[in-house]
Length: 131
Image 1 (cartoon, rainbow, N blue to C red):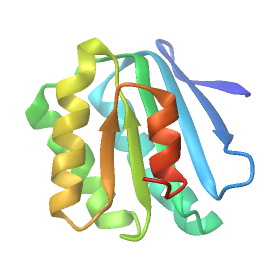
Image 2: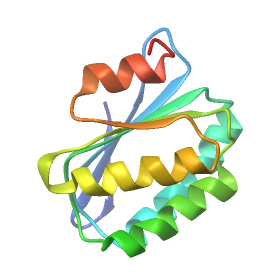
Image 3: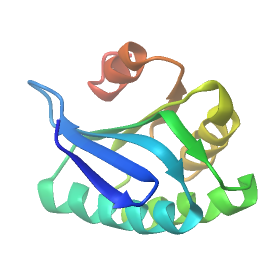
């Protein structure tokens, strides 16, 4: 899992699930609104370019510095650029559970199969379509 610093306070580990067309990103550190907006657009472009079926975004080791209203803008980026067939799993930690629930609810209303989970195993099962 190669980790690449996206900003001074945020590391994003990028990898894919074995035997699945699922891209994964694990965010570690402090995530700011500007990071999220740029990452959402780049991730959407990557998913389109690679023809992915699903993504897992693991925020369980991440501190989000967004207000919920600011997080809406990130969801809007996904809704505009992410193909609607892509299943989206969010793994949350105690400090960002409401963000994950809010995001998945918003994406669900936009037609996406999106869910928030408190553990990796359930998020992976959903991403693989085994829900």
